[in-house]
Length: 120
Image (cartoon, rainbow, N blue to C red; front, side, top):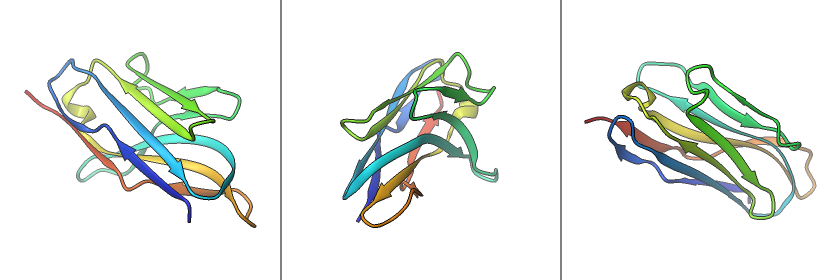
């Protein structure tokens, strides 16, 4: 059973920093692209950042220069370092990872979400 577990969310003041982590566990035989999404109340889920197997990254315009995505294949983790946080970054953050498990091809898995609240 493959599982993704996020951690690192919380309450932070504007201008502050947080580091989100997402760890994959279970019978994993391959890791593809890794992504962070977020969803604010009343809004659609949006892609925040992604990192390919080659380490190529891409960011939403709203977070460029403030957020950094990274991955550690050995530890099966993907991280999101967030700095210069703004109230509009407040959302539930989800990790999304393409994984290959036993007897399967690559498929997309989601974490349960971690809340980030930016407020003074």
